[in-house]
Length: 78
Image 1 (tube, rainbow, N blue to C red):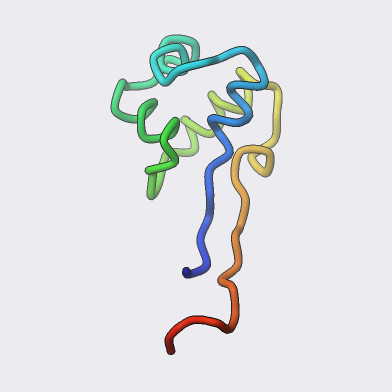
Image 2 (image 1 turned 90 degrees about the vertical axis):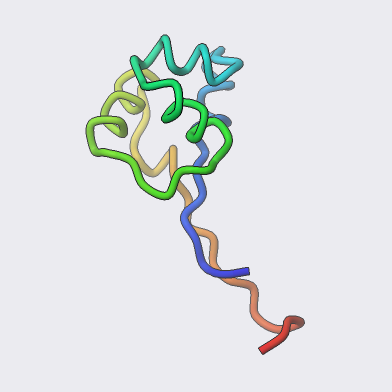
């Protein structure tokens, strides 16, 4: 495992009543592929505008949507 940024978009969306990438797409006004990748936590980057749309719609801060996961030390191959 390596250090990474993980998306919590799906978790936040579901807590606000959004239950699919299709609903996310329509509610936020995202392209279908962007919504699906956000939903599946498969994005490697997205625009500030997308982040602003998500924060506005879900009344949250960027830190609510993204978390930093530190690499676990030991037990693995070097």
